[in-house]
Image (cartoon, rainbow, N blue to C red; front, side):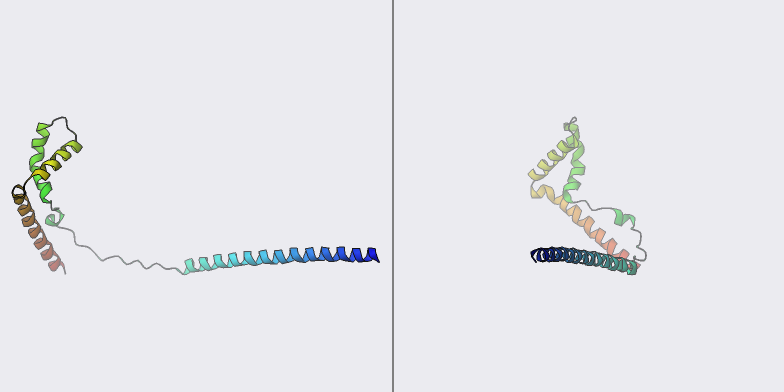
Length: 139
C-alpha cells in the first residue's frame, strides 16, 4: 500500500508540474498575442493615417526696401568708426576690434549717441511705412 501511495503521489506531482507548465505556456501565448494585437493596431492606425498638408498659396516676394535690414544705433556707429579703429590697431583681429568698439560705445554720452538713434528711428518709420503699404496693396 505504501508503494502504491508513493506512486500515486509521484504521478500527482508530475501532473501538477505538467499543469503548471501548460498554464505558463498559455500565459506566455496570451502575452505574445497581446503584443501582436497591439502591433496590428499600430499598423492599422498608420495605414489609416492620411496627412493633410496645407501650404500657403504664394508669398509675395520681398522688395528691395523689405530686404534691407534695419541697423540699430550701435551698428550705425560701428560702421562709421570701424575703419578708424582698424587703422589704429592694424594687427588686431575681428574679436578685438569688436571689443574696442563696444567699449567705446559704452563710453559715449547720450548726446553723442542721439544722432544715431534718430537716424535709426527715421529708417524704422520709413521701413514700417513701406511694409504696411506693400501688404495693404497685396491684399
